[in-house]
Image (cartoon, rainbow, N blue to C red; front, side, top):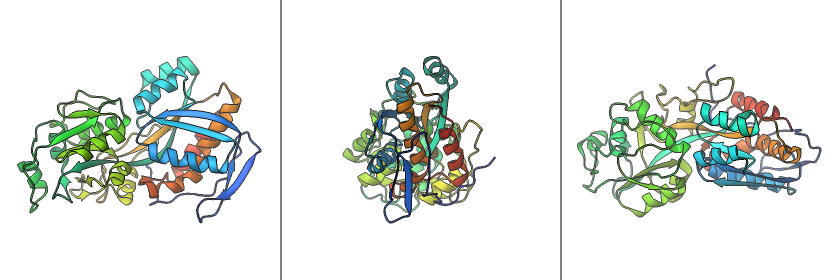
Length: 356
């Protein structure tokens, strides 16, 4: 089934009943009344830095409506988040790439079946710090050549070919990549592998043998390192680049157009994904839409299908129902793409299937 996203459409009125009768009503900004199930207690999660900014907004909003509930989320990277989730040191995980078969087998052995819940979508921005180049354009082959260490200066002929008429300096290129196991890296290298396989040969994974550059921990670490060095380039969820006022490259898509990671461009790309029954959605890094931004992906929450602690499980369900429901209204303002109604309903059903 193809996933047709309504542009920035989101349902903001949600009534939930997740094992708690302590419901609170409140206003979400100037919008309609939102009813939220509010069981008291504390839960913790860890993982994706891609989802960091929206997850923290969800937590603030949820706790404002549910003062008896406490949610903590540590943005430590998808790989580390899966490890902590599997070890049972956190109640839920966050990852930009669904668990592999091996990872899921390990989790099942420790805590039982895992429910995978898409909770938002967004773009991976190619962020750069280069004086005098405010509107950089990069084709997949050029981008792959830069991160493969084959293109070493900003005045390289390949970059000039993508930016006809632009005055590009001879500044050396400093590549910055993630040093930790990262779903953002898996998605970024997945794009390079799909779009420029003859140039990018280092593979696609949460961590790869980087041919060039220096590592930094987390999306915030990559962004900070790019910010500090003229000529630097890196990748991060788009809100990090926006917040740091770095340059953001437009990427050439399959239709031959250079597109930025704007909300509509991301929505157009994600609309070509397919929803499998287990909701482990794989991004389509070669979307055919004329406006599509190709480095777009979903990100996921992980929870055990049968909760061992009913009190924690109830708080977890309340929070996740809020995140995939009313919380979606926070997505556009934070440069994420809200779930479309079809996927939102499936995500809500997945959360409600969790047994406490």
